[in-house]
Length: 196
Image (tube, one colour):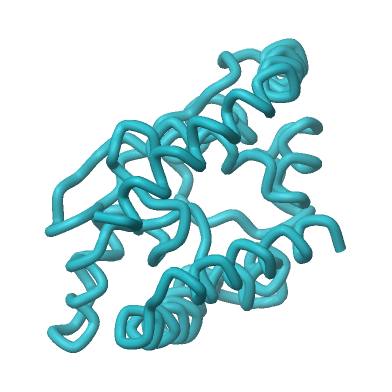
């Protein structure tokens, strides 16, 4: 309950402080390319329930039809504004609204798309037993994930066979040892990574 209250209060405070900045980013995204400012993607959350996760749109319309993974600077689907937003993870900021309405937490395993969750083995499924988050240790470790995938001859296979299992292992460790102080450390590390 304390974590839930913290999430609600922290997201509300962050949205209040960041609102002018968020509006500027939304206008920039909307003017940079056709398709509007936001992108809502179906993700799997607590207890396997799907929800719409908010992001600033960083790709051209209908880009998901050619694959959900992005592969760094060479991905032609990413817009000019989108490249900047992705580099500093600013495209994730609208997920504060997901936290405010209870779909997500500030800290917790990043929610996956249904196609990849369908590949989880029984040992990995416990990650669905906690509310997903905006950031976690896996997000910090794989901050430049798209650049890593760009170096692969088969990004989809690399993600499924290497990156996703490694991220899930970090998430399971988080679930076993989670604490309020630990969450604060994840938030601090995430902010340092974004600014560094």
